Amino acid sequence: MKKLRNRLIFHFTLQFITISIAIALIVIVLLFILLNYIAKDEMKRNIAVGTLEGIFNETELYEDKAIIPNNWKEILKPRQMWVQVINNNGDVIGEFNTPRDLPSNYDISDILSIEKNQELEGYTVLSRLDNTYEELYYFILGESIS
Image (cartoon, rainbow, N blue to C red; front, side):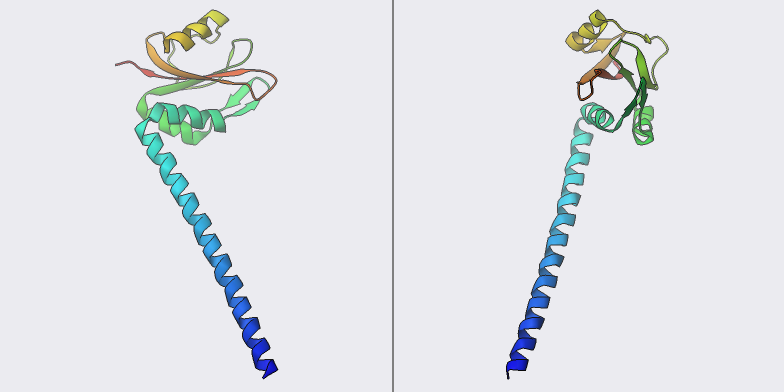
């Protein structure tokens, strides 16, 4: 009788642990699916802000060079959007789909004007300052006003 009781306890415990792990994994997977859905929905509602945020978070910065991920380039191109990454000296260290009439170097008054007016050379722009490194980086995302 004691053997049977021990076997029942062992099987119940094993099933309980297995089901608990399975439920935890299902909840985690559902949470990731929900977060992905929320992020995509937010991106659809406000494409420019979501795009700038994504580029800001995923761009790799190396000694005077910014590498913008290809998945963001694929999003920018069909929407006639462009991006520039500016270093502490005002030099453009990374860009994609940038119109030819935009400068490759900015001074502080240009950046302050961009921040204030959210416009640059006839383009609507959003900008964000990255101060996570010793050197500051400034991201500008633009699109045609049309």
